Structure formats: structure tokens, C-alpha cells
Picture 1 (cartoon, rainbow, N blue to C red):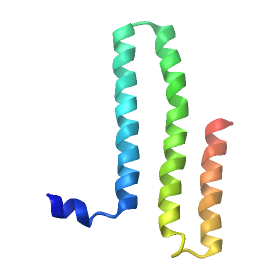
Picture 2: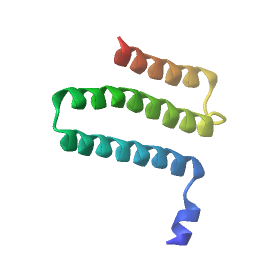
Picture 3: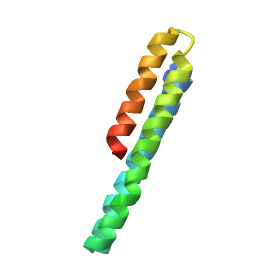
Length: 93
């Protein structure tokens, strides 16, 4: 098991860790909704989650981009950045 963990790329570990943390936050929010059993509180919790999703998306994408930036040309890096920008525009508009 230790050998397997050492063979993983640190960037991949960071990205996976961010996604696991996001999943734990989402699961905790779902459990809180069930505990409170109130629509207004559930909506407030859901609104707070609207911040978590895009933040994790940006962070994991940034980690991945920094790790492959030396392998990509500027035009391809620009296309990736444009794609992320379009996703964020779609989320917030």
C-alpha cells in the first residue's frame, strides 16, 4: 500500500483530496438538511453549497493546469482557460 501511494503524482493526490473534501462537505450538508427537517434551513444550506462547488472546480483545475503547464502550448492553455471561464459564466449567469 505504501509503495502505491508513493507512486502517485502529488498533483493528482491534491486534486483527489480536494474532491474528497468536497464530497464530505456535500454529504455533511445533506445530513444537516435531514437533521434540521426545515425547508428554509435546507435552502440556506444549499445556498452555501453553491459556493463550494465552483471553488473546488477552480482549485482542482488550477492544480492540474499548473502541473501540465510546461507540457501545453500557450494556445492550448488559453483554450483551457476559456473553457473554465465559460463554465463559470454558465454557473453564475
